[in-house]
Image (cartoon, rainbow, N blue to C red; front, side, top):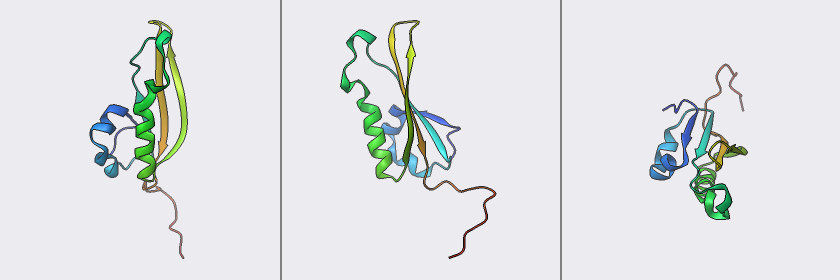
Length: 98
């Protein structure tokens, strides 16, 4: 199954077993903001932390994390993470003997 590059934390938390079927070498995971910028709390990103833990347990590697700020509506932006799939097949790579 291919995700096409991106999915949301809520989708992964609803159906974590689906990530075992993903064949994309990299997946972008996006968390939607839930609180205004002025009320940002450390627990605001608990969904991403839960996804990171879940993905780590499945062998995925967190490559990068960033925040995207949305100044237009004064809402704390989204946390976005890039994950590397340990099971993705390398295309056009010679198989290693040994």
